[in-house]
Length: 383
Image (cartoon, rainbow, N blue to C red; front, side, top):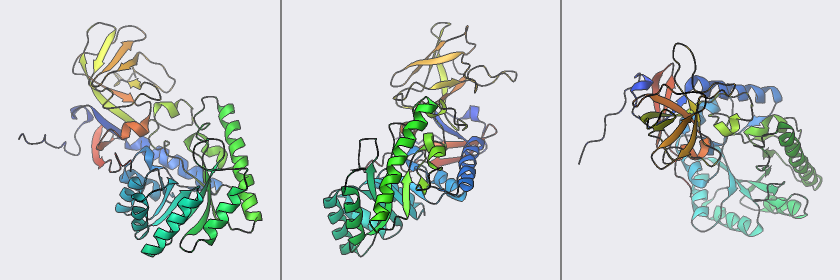
């Protein structure tokens, strides 16, 4: 058996790292984290960043150090990873159902202050029984369907108050509040449409919260929103916390919304072939980054201080037009490209969340050098 390749030493230049490899620029990451931290501090709201976007405990700890109240996870397995990393306040923004997962949830409740979404009375009863068996009292958020038409109790139905009261009356569960997600509008390219759609959903959420409180129940937490509409949700009195996630790394799809964040996440890739003057082939394909929200943007290293690939104004000289399993296929947009086999470029992924899920590690870089290698510990934790 051949020995594994030697690990890249901390401090090495980026252009000496083997490719393809996932990079995070620490200056840009810290800018994004601090930008949102400042906004939430000034708005008097809580940020509970969604770790499904980066799946990396090291990044979650940076967010917590900057003032985040806790973290959000999509799956029980992600929450277990974050608890293993010493994070205590965790929301699973999803229903946890069935004989395999509910016992795991209760074991997790032994070692952190877990909170989970619920939208079904039978699931609630199962959770209550399992909590009694273990001797824990996890927190519950009743999930409402405020327009996304995925999970949740219909916001306008009497079932909202009924389920909230059932959680409140459960012997072994704590009613913490309500959550709702407007995922169908948070990434709309048109800002007016996005903000109008978000307000419609947030109005529904606010009305439901008022109805639950009018029924005599205390609603401490109202959790909602994402990166695309965080600045709308923090203007609502009813909202207490926001589950934004993509802001930290900022992929190409969210970057198109012009929210003022920097592209911290890139894939470093090597040019492997120049079959024609108009074509560039690289070693990063579908097994390295995902295209479901669009092909990646191309970022070239500067020559003589001039950025020749992509800049914040959207000027592009190369574009990715196809990805196969192992190859990225690029074409010249504005004249011939100087690149030759062996040279490096960076891709800005179209979708950061699913791109992260393809990698075991992310290389943290600053000023052109490797500063740390972080495990993407929640990668593949889909159960």
